[in-house]
Amino acid sequence: MMFNGVKWLFFDMGSTLVDETDAYKVWFRRASDAVGGAISPEELWKRYQEGMAQYNATIAGHLKPFGYQHERTGHMYPSELDRAYPEAKPLLEKLSKTYKIGVIANQSRGAAERLESYGLLPYIDFVLGSAEAGLVKPDPRIFRLALEKAGCRPREAVMIGDRPDNDIYPAKRLGLRTIRIRQGTSCTQLPKSLAYEADATVHSLDELYEVLVR
Image (cartoon, rainbow, N blue to C red):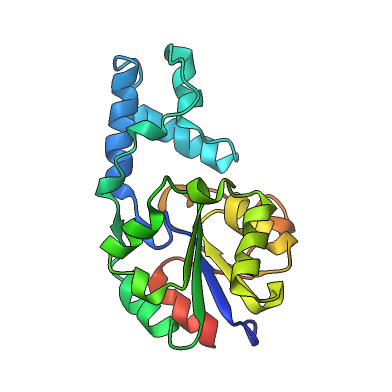
């Protein structure tokens, strides 16, 4: 069995446990407004998706030709609109009976509090958010820190996330096993080499349990 001997599951948050669809709609509308509507939210979304497919997706970069002067647009992101996927809570409840669960996520401060508000935190043993850790995926140090917190060897852990670049590639390099959930804003991103190819790929949280236990 592919995942024999696994003790820990490390989850990403956005587009993995957390549905960002509504927040992204508002984010792109605010980004369009920031340049006076010089690029529509729809066109910005199209260019963002094209950039994501090429491993080069930054909203600020797409706004610069229209006079946007800042390096980041994260302050425009309405995290209050994020919601846990409906499948997330029952899945974590079931998985937590067999595995320890950690979260490794590029998130603004308060990731643990947001997970608590979604009702997910009772099933999670630790949360390693980039803002608090001072480390951002794909930096391998954040994965090493997670392994240290878990007290497990790389082969005893599975990284589960939506992005080949931020989740799968760095985790594989350290020897973790990997599962990609191909959903959300990164669904157009294809592995650019075998190093970016997950050990298993699913298209929703509903498929994850069977992959882990089969």
